[in-house]
Length: 328
Image (cartoon, helix red, strand yellow):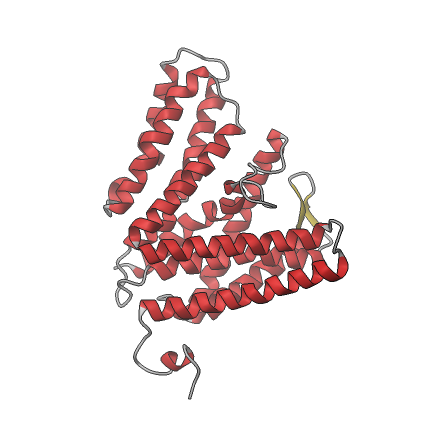
């Protein structure tokens, strides 16, 4: 008898959402358990009592994956409200880190209040109420225009354009772009109703695994640095190997999506490339500010924005690919 879930792929009856989530998260937990055991063995055998950059970084990444999977799994179990609440918190924390590392003055306080306590919660409220028409333009149009107006009322013209642009950029990256992850729950895809949470799993699994594979391939084969000034650890070999490997992962889990294997692989390839540039662009901002990480919230990985920088560029692209090609 074919193994489960392959048994369902060979029959006409698809798995239910709960069965799919159990199979998927069970597989992820098994992989993480093996990775944790390997990481612990490497630490015990090669560097039991002294720091080891590569092994310690690997184990920190594995721990971060455990936390991330548990949080996402818990949010999905709680339903749409849980997912929206989780990403609203992620947006708030990411925006706080972004603003903390950028130059602001007293004249910006009013604009920052509007950003944190009006536009951020309103953006997620619009997702909760499925109001796509306003969700899609609230920040790119209304916040873009109103925030500089609010800042100008402070009568502080010192570096005004630079300051206004930083607040606008932070709101776009940390709130607008990241809000496209829970917005996937609002899409009405024929023959896929009630299963949209799996699109979130697909997005996060492929994009975040791409970061890990880029790191591994870079350590194994990396020679040519993409930009030593922006991200010294990123290599061309790591980028190509990581993106292609993660695209293969996306193609392998096509059964949780409305895509066929080729579509899943190509979409995964696209969002992985965008995810790389998300991390790359935000690394350039960190180098401009003279820091290595956005914060210190996550052990071994800096701040929240360090973990979701790739999602900020990939989530809107993924959302619109699905919306324009799979939603009637």
